[in-house]
Image (cartoon, helix red, strand yellow):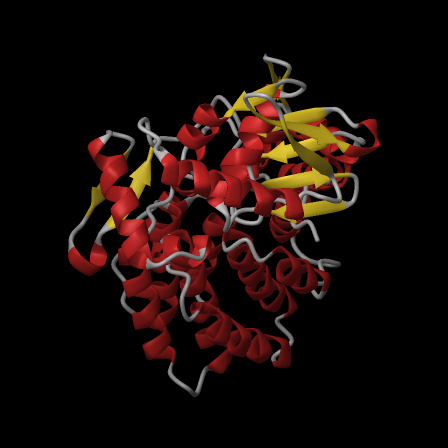
Length: 406
């Protein structure tokens, strides 16, 4: 390694991309191309970074497997930043195996951490937890220890375990301070702020109260019957009844819970569940059917009884009833939460993360664009979508499978 390459590498390790470019900007040999690609990635020029890293990998060829594998890992990180989530697991696994075989423990673990971050973006929390458990961070540079701590903290937050998350944030911040990379330290501090921001709203007996993540965790651990509008389901103690794929039943459950301990008249229930202002006899018949279905599903948690004008929710075991409402309500709340992370998402990546079809995502994005809540950049296959950051509250509870309850 010549002196210019070594100096550029030291600058990149410290997060100084401009100084690194001063050393290698005019060189086209594979090591210089790789360092230029990493520098461009740090500056946010992801398309250019990917092109440079691919050129470097081709330049190294098959006779320099170690250097080529490092380029593959760097390109995978760029792809993750671009929210290009397809095809990463296979290439990362191969690169990690090559790096491990060549005794490059640090980069092998970093490849695994990129895989963990991808799983977190997709909401596959159990897979992410298993993959993170296989990452050995002992002896790694402080910057990689900080990255591992951030991944572990996000996993704990997404699983609504705030005390472990706080401990992981502390470890990550300590490692970031030792690494002396300002951007990394700022990322840790910003991620940690999610613990102090409102995460949801508690509705009970007509009163509304903002809740932080720790307070949401305590509420779900209590004996209350919680109608969870974040994940669309019913929760009480260790019992979880998902209704995300039963929107009519959830709308009925939420309406009954918001009125508790009073009842809800049939006209209001029809309007909430079927979104019509002019109910007829067919709607009344359908309401009876849907109430019967909800009564059967909610039987272990509550009774739904007929009243003079409609229906009333009566929880079992003398529980109180609470409605947990996300900070951003509406059908596209999870979509907005993903877009608010500051990255530019493709429709295919959004569909993969939300478990929906691309056509469904496209329709939702068009509606949000008309409302001025999102904007697009690029065209055709290069089109990406952005939204303004949601800085007044945390969107943890809106992200895919934020609460992996059985």
